[in-house]
Length: 393
Image (cartoon, rainbow, N blue to C red; front, side):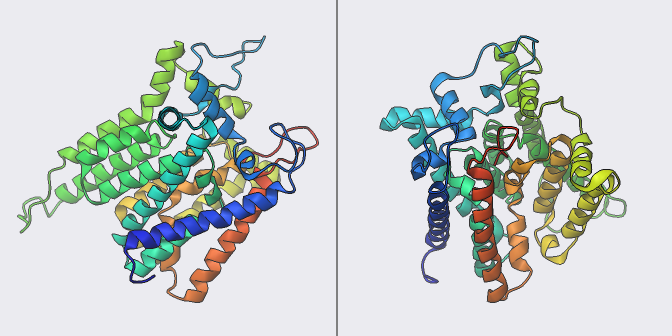
């Protein structure tokens, strides 16, 4: 296998990882009881087409409502505007070309995009490490505890493919080529805001490096590339971050249509930072709960300053910091938070750089697979809570 082309090696790793995840899904399905979607003990295809997959299928078939649905009190109800359009649009295209049903076409797109995301992740890792280490980073990416979501009809795999392509182009300083990729990414999942923040901060860093005192009058042997393409990418990224909320506003006539829809699942309005303290108090009590978010941020800061993560370079570290900052500001922490950590995939290379030991790297991969079992059995499989409903994956 070591003599095979890199793309075959990476593709083989991804496909084997997805086969392992499929076996876990099938084993969990044998123990699935009564649920809102299908009879007990469903087959694999029914089992992976639940939760948000049904919403994407709804968008594929019926599109988005022109008027936000509300209850008798005027409160906005759950609706399709919480789910970005690019994934179901591609599903409709594939269905039209192949005759496949919505579930089949969306599953096919998710699998193919997941494969593409793993190939792009490897290319990103090769910018910072040798082939073997980059390959192990891809193993960690493909076996991450929530990586089974890459083979279900969710938009995560499509978003990771576009995000990875955008990050790779930024690393290569091909900022003009990154612009259309970022616009598409803004229609796949809500990663546009942190990406725009990353590009804006990167522009500030480049300006500081160029104009810092003591270097202004130096004439380098190799002139630095112009900054206007990076500034253009920053502007386009800002547009991409606002694109989907703007489309929801244009169609429904409600300027807050997307925000109102997104917060329906939370049960309360969007309040920055506060949900993290509320969840901390719920889990650890009133004293430790108020401290827990600060401990979490401090631990992440230490991680960002560790030697393996520093080796990722400015762009990838900046992305990880901006994305985590975005989660801290806007996210309501819950069981779905584990799935939302996937865009931090550059840290998979950091994990591979911790040690060259095969025992260490193999142990991490095995631990990730075991945690896949926990994620699928605990969160993907439906087990109704005493008050109704279940924890979402």
